[in-house]
Length: 256
Image (cartoon, rainbow, N blue to C red):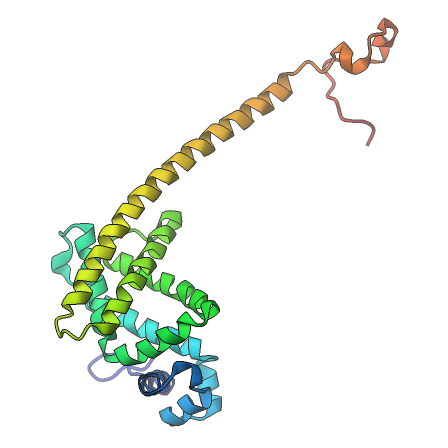
């Protein structure tokens, strides 16, 4: 990417067009019903052709994903080093409040989108996947490990925290977002309790897994040590003894 004289990356024409499309979609959503907004409406509002818009976004959901990425960047760029020594929940609270602050200009549009998503569970499920990726970045911004299976659980838990707080945020008219802060604090406290319960459950599952693995290994050892020359297998007639396989030869289950 080209750079300006000040050394900052110069925004490309394609990047500017993407931002214009996102802004246009948000303006239309704020003034209308998200379900009824067509891709051609967004292209016209953004002043781009449908061909150019198709090159950037293949659906309205993709445009919303673009907005989510924009919000992610704003939050991550606003990192507060002074929060590093605070407890994990306080760091996470600070990060999520920065996220709600970044979403304030799009509140009217997001109300329209959320109404539409409540009527479309498939779209909501798709958005959940995208939002979970964003919440992993929020966890990392708060200094909380978001890797592995536990990271996935934490990220999904944070999606639930966001979902519980979002309706309050959409109705919160206070410039200081006091109601949003109170709702987020409650949701995080409840989320902590759920995570403690889940961690206990995971430890129990892990212990059970170890027990089952041990039992399986013992069963394999028993199979290996079993006396396969038992008369109940080869017959009781002593005359058959000469036809038995040698004790050192493995039972191959027949000719190959």
